Amino acid sequence: MVTQPILDNIQQYIHALEQHGLPVSLVILFGSYASGHTNEWSDIDLIVISPRFDGNVSIEDVNLLWHTTLEIDNRIEPIACGQKQWQEDMVTPLLNVARREGVMIKPVAEPA
Image (cartoon, rainbow, N blue to C red):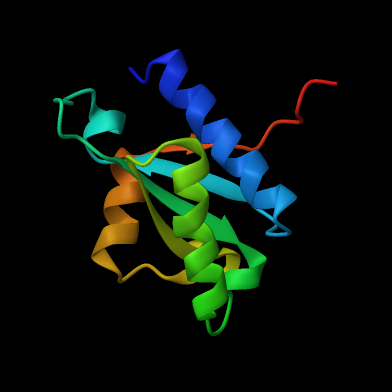
């Protein structure tokens, strides 16, 4: 079970990415936080799904993913994934693990 503080940090991360101009369709939490087997060294493994990542992912967008972690929670380890790739790529092992074991987190509107 994912704890509420981790879910809150992920939502804050999504909102920060969107404030920086990156549309986020979905985030998949996978790894130790998704399985509930964390320790003091665990990172927060996320696949960030955005239509902007379909095709070539720019170094600027990769930098945005990583720099934004410093604003929210430096344990976040983001991986960029295009929306089309998430829907169609059935051969990449990491994506298959995330589909099978991950926790889908949809962006929610920030409270007014």
